[in-house]
Length: 207
Image 1 (cartoon, rainbow, N blue to C red):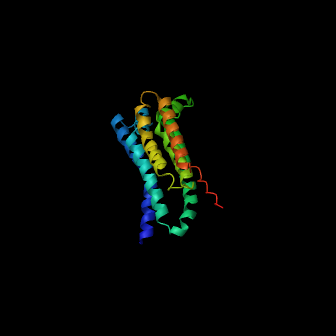
Image 2: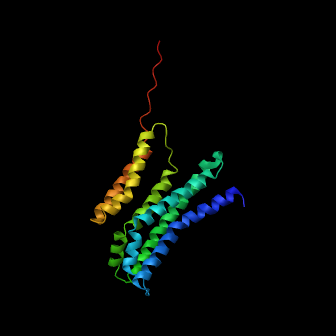
């Protein structure tokens, strides 16, 4: 097995890591509650509110994306980012659909979907994680002038790192405020990363 194949295998495993980690932790909490036919609601919320699982999943996706791009030859990296962007969007959709199904399962597949919707929004990271994947999918195909954005990019990264803290600290007091604040920080960081600044005016030739 050559280096390229090893990188591809590791990258694929990193994509699955957020789902496996969440499933294993859910089983751990489920065992603590006592196994039953339906997943306990507290186990579902325990997984979807855990900031460490969110950070682990986000870092795994970021590392997988970096490995996929760096594994390509420099001349072909620009061609690689578009399939990666589409894959991230599909992964975001799969993550969100899985969160809905799991929340419904935790509510006993009740025809009254109010409890499912409440748990879905109470879970916080079930919405933010797919949103970040979609954001990343657009970010990797957006040309950015690194030379003119050194300070702006650093500030944007700090804002993105603050998103989990806002969700956890603010969200545990007010769910809507926590989600709104995290969404605002994400949009602000995206704008800062996409901003290229004003082009410098060329000096007029002297006569």
